Image 1: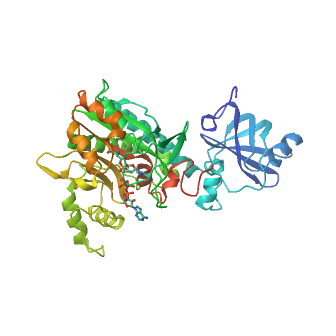
Image 2 (image 1 turned 180 degrees about the vertical axis):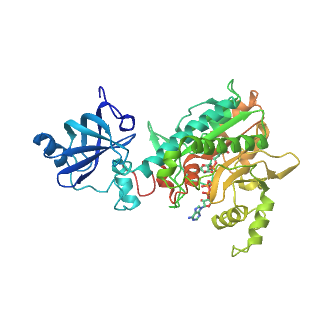
Image 3 (image 1 turned 90 degrees about the vertical axis):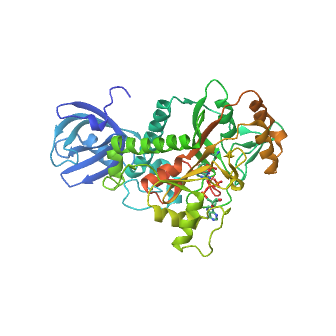
Length: 434
Ligand code: ATP
Ligand code: AMO
């Protein structure tokens, strides 16, 4: 809109055209105020009924809440106005009227259930504290990209319609691809690995992953955002260094650039970027510590995957971000390399927030014969992964990497109760639209 000024930029002495939504109308009798809201904030528009054109007053005060209006007028200092300035309008135009019955209250005075909010995301995101989550999410992704680039990694995009799955623990979504069976990609795992053998050597991808998770939990989505990294010539320990740096960079960027958003969420005092090195516990130490808490009904033994309650108990015990390293080979995927001196022990690692797992990663098996043998051990047909394995015959360097769950990072960073709050339009078992 030509000549439009954001409300936050309106200064006393200016003559402005401001556009946005009617946040509130306060009628005090002889004087009334329209609070206009836009992306940058809010501004008060003053109507002195006896002194102003009748039609102008009628238009300005007759409009329903959440209608879209454009107001032109002079900006003056007014200490009693919420932002210290107000506009005295010489014109008000209604661009889009809003129904007086709203499915949820964007002023936030009336709470709404999460499902109502998700059904009406447009209105929900008119609330400062909801908008803040997505401004922070955008800042996190910006910072993560920058950090990867500082590590000399190249951003890539890999296919999301694929022929095979990679992550054994979760189901695939089948689709029909010109009469053939295909799947939605669970992870860019194999493609990012193929790229470390290419001229790109070190890559990252931020993109969707699709998982037909059977559980309906507050921390699983059926479409999630994976932040993937993979690099030639590094081992699992160096991959952990990168992982830690990326997570810290995300927190630091939010701390530095998102104070307004943190305030909207009431987190300005609590929010802290993690400091110091993340402790690295071996799987063996992890199960011992979980058992020692006495919080599980049954003691864990070597080879068990960590149950959700176990992760929770350990998280409370450790109290900060930490890694779990040296997992039993049998519970890690085929692409993870075992330790050279002990093939029961893998180089796989997880990075944990006290409340949940955020990352899986490890050094990869880059030796062709070992890779093919690993497929067979896990009951997978190496033939169907031929497009992947054959590249390991033409000079595939040792490499390592990780996948970080984008929504889990945001969720744990902001203390959100439900992962769906970190996605604009979440996909779960019950939700396919909007
Ligand atoms: P993986 O990497 O093993 O595929 P994940 O990244 O989803 O799983 P988590 O979310 O930490 O890992 O879950 C750990 C394990 O607990 C997973 O095997 C998951 O399927 C299982 N799990 C999660 N929530 C529940 C639940 N509510 N009930 C039962 N099992 C659950
Ligand atoms: P993994 O399966 O552990 O590893 O996934 C990596 C991270 O992605 C996030 N995540 C999810 N977030 C929300 N909903 C889901 N359904 C979901 N599934 C996974 C988690 C998890 O830690 N290929 C490996 C990574 C690698 O080795 O590089 C992989 O996909 O935060």
